Image (cartoon, rainbow, N blue to C red; front, side, top):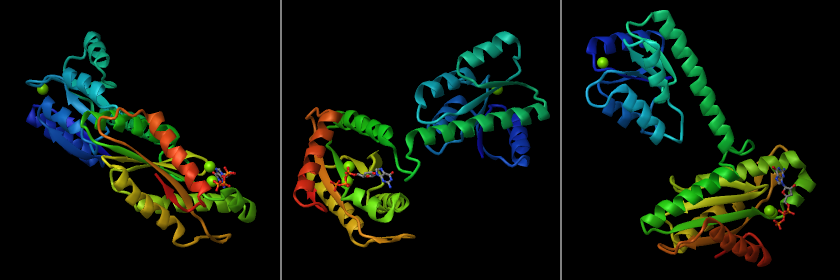
Length: 293
Ligand code: GH3
Ligand code: MG
Ligand code: MG
Ligand code: MG
């Protein structure tokens, strides 16, 4: 596990780093508050940070406040480190967003158990967030998470005058798959189909399970023509070969509806989904395993 230490006192920083590395932590260090904030806002930042209170420029309190207001997509466990250990300072630090407080000079055993407690909370937090946003069967985003992403992209790209497209896919005759091969086979097909679909998307596209056997793909900065190309890759990746399962080789296909919101169109999330849903309905009516815009 990675830990960030921010301390302007070089000796104190090195001593902490040494101690934590002996305990098996991967340590990153910075010498001021601004660098701590910059680092903690990066997506691959440590989930636990030990922050010195007194630093030139931005102090530890400022760091806690800024991280709490800016970092929303994950939880950084913040331990404030300071020689001011009176109750009023503890209260001030925790009000600013610190999770814990360690006096300087610190007792090594106390530091060890406090970091361990922080690690436990931080890991639990990560697991909870993952569970809340991902589908248990397929591992892709769940309905709430993928709609959330769509709403955010519509706002963000609307501001940047860029398009957003969605692909709505529904497995063909999936009830029949379940009836013929059983529900466990159906589950295996769902997992393999989402794996195939994920494999042909661009890195910044998001794939979610909208409902039972319905997939929703959000394509930022993508117009209708671009989305049609991606949709064809998706369609053929699913239909190309039957899915090999322990219950036999099961042919599968997706019917797909595509819709795009043009720049400055002010399209709402539900408006865009309605368009994609109507297109999907036409794809079904038109014979399945096909794409409609
Ligand atoms: P169509 O081509 O018109 O979409 O037909 P369909 O049979 O796919 O559509 P329908 O909506 O009638 O059936 C969807 C089926 O998907 C019914 C449901 O049991 C199945 N299903 C939904 N979620 C799951 C799941 O998690 N696992 C399995 N095995 N089946 C599921
Ligand atoms: Mg200091
Ligand atoms: Mg369906
Ligand atoms: Mg279906």
